[in-house]
Image: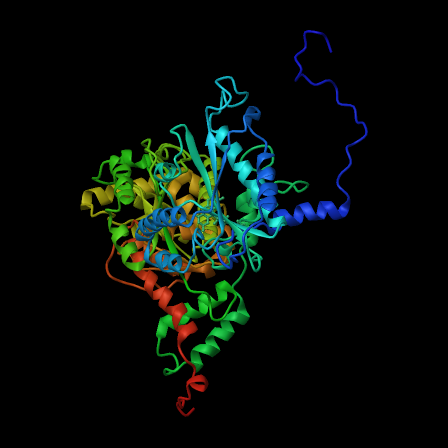
Length: 594
Ligand SMILES: Cc1cc2nc3c(=O)[nH]c(=O)nc-3n(C[C@H](O)[C@H](O)[C@H](O)COP(=O)(O)O)c2cc1C
């Protein structure tokens, strides 16, 4: 190394003696404490925490790494009852506010959760952050001011692990307005609250997070979180990265025949005439088969994912609606003012909106997942709507949306869509996958006149003649004549099917996407429930090809997920009947003579 070389310019690495790992038993103890650390909210004992134990735990926190070694934390130890009562009241208000914001099924589940133990624990510890500590030249914080708060969080982690090893439970409470709590604690303006921790001895530690035991949210598999080299190339170390699509295609399994047989047999033993629930019985058998359990789990909580995107084919005047309406409707969904919001609220489902390809830049908003692959497709009459790589990325957006919603505890997924001109792309896809003539599967969308309809049929025909999409190459077909929301919806269906949750389809856009999904993974068909029969002729053809019987036939042709949300209570009832209704033998009711 020359004298002018900087200290961080490495020389050629030479392998030398390695620092010794911990002896096996100590190593095991380290991993044990990491695995067994729990957020604890129940089962606290009133026993005081001795000062020396508390000091050891605080010392562990104080050993945390920090940006530029700035040690931005302080610890406020609270034991006074009156103060904790005032703080508990602050948390109660925020809890109520949050509860009021939840969809019905979530609100019911939340009601069962304990979210703080401020008064049940003998000690509360507040961990703070001073972003100004150390002056303006703090190493590292200069470029990333947020690293000050990250450092305080690491102090919390140290405290949490040490506490677990001491047999002390710790519960983190974040139901606070930060400034309201800061005022109660007398914090100077430059000091922020990072964590409010309730600490005390416990009778036992739960084996898994309480939120996972209650089904509120599930642990994501490690393989979902590890990427090789670049975001998106998922794979555990030592294994080749696998495309998300290939992984999910391989993970979609046929329905569980044993669970379906058990469901059929159970239906026949329920206190009702055999078969009297008609198609509801069929749905219940399907739900058992797809979950691999009889009775199947309840189909709640449920979430509608509205995939929004624009279409280059709009330039061919296939609809009287301006393209800006896509973005405007996204704003409406996010404000809660659209039809799908009303019906989903009635059904108790959450609505989330995924921007997979809206032409306009959309401002950030709660409930919006910004996943734009490209700002709208190209005009399919002039060239392919998108590249194959873009189609695959849109499929991946759908897969990841399904994974995230299921990891967040949802047990039923509903398809929604928004995209001016998307019935044109749907007609083209349905024609590709069913072999139907464009004329027979092109509908009137939002209600177009005869002249526009003729033009629309011509546009679909021209696009198909130009690209000649191969139904045996679903990704190629999506790229040629599909929409970004169709590709994402197909991924959403595959992602949900791989996780064994039911997918309720909305109308013609979902049906077109479902054809692509089933072409990608034929067993996915078993996980689809047709929410309703859209008036669009393409939907009829697609449902027939998919072998699906729609649950509702109310002349709907809106999209958005409205028909799927309307069908949700039917699907939920199917699961509930199988789980809740008494059997003849159980209830002592005589059955009909054979
Ligand atoms: C930043 C943060 C804030 C949290 N806030 C709360 C809270 O307000 N109420 C609550 O009950 N749990 C809260 N938790 C606990 C999480 O729900 C818990 O860590 C998670 O479910 C994982 O469980 P585990 O800690 O037992 O592994 C919080 C955790 C973190 C990291």
